[in-house]
Length: 176
Image (cartoon, rainbow, N blue to C red; front, side):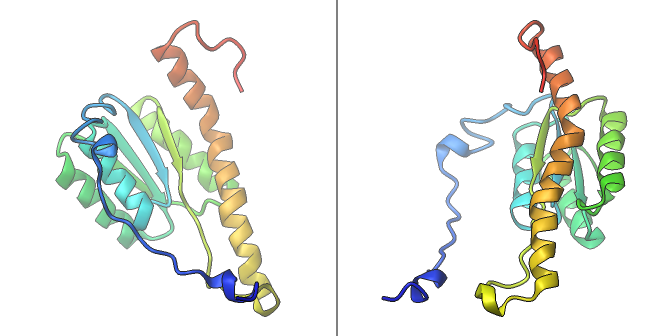
């Protein structure tokens, strides 16, 4: 098999919820009282993460994405999984620094803290060979996947440090 043939391996999906990661089993109550911020929450892994944190008892879940319809569907799923979990969403492009900073601050103001952050937003228009790729799409992948993750982490870290301080006073002396 040539190296070109091995670039497009079959990728299988697994959908088995095993006991160690079951939010209503081994992880039951593990998110109790926590506020969770999820970027890229309108579908796929982000949506599943929101549902799992709701089942694990999260106090609040804040969702961001560029798809309002997807965010509404995810919010409905969160409420279905846990009617006591508060959920809010905001349209946000993770490559826009102002959007991300505003979403993080809105989450902290709405829920009083941010305890968990899932920087899940991602983009990849189409798997293709490098020489056949389209430059604008290729660059967008880098913007969303790297810059977006950086911006979410950059603006969330001060809130995560504060959360850790209030939950474990004395254990954080330096910060990040």
